[in-house]
Image 1 (cartoon, rainbow, N blue to C red):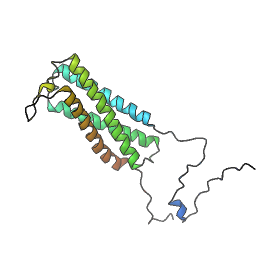
Image 2: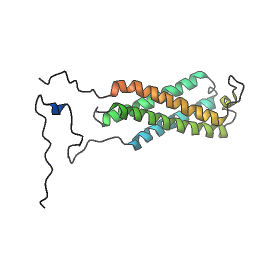
Image 3: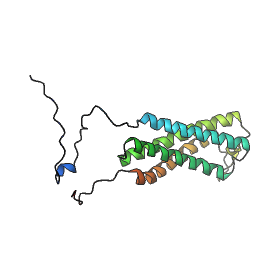
Image 4: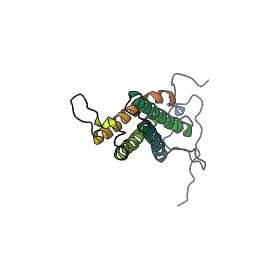
Length: 185
């Protein structure tokens, strides 16, 4: 049997329907564009989480942790980290970031950052128990807010913030779909 060479990818003719339906197989090339892997998405989430833990530690040590503005600034940092992760992913794909790929990047980044913040909150509660007075607050029903419940609330709030941030950010970073009504003339 004679070995065959792969066929060269021919460009679509002008006005051809092949231009609107690209091949599902990537073109063969020795040089590929850099891509952001899930590993870098996790690293961006860990970086954002470390920043959040550092801020929470400073807020606890300076005594303004129980103020609502401190939590608001935490959320703004989480939104910033999520948006930066999506922007980085879009840059690495040369602006060809699909909507769901960017959406997933934002959610994973926010969840990883929230887990890191939650674990940091548990460590801070053990190390500095009196500085974390939030854990002794009572909710509407009169139950004490335990550390584990606070950990779960941090993850839930961070996850939902990541979903909302990703939905909004992907309106800006998504690639534009081709318009079949426009001609290439």
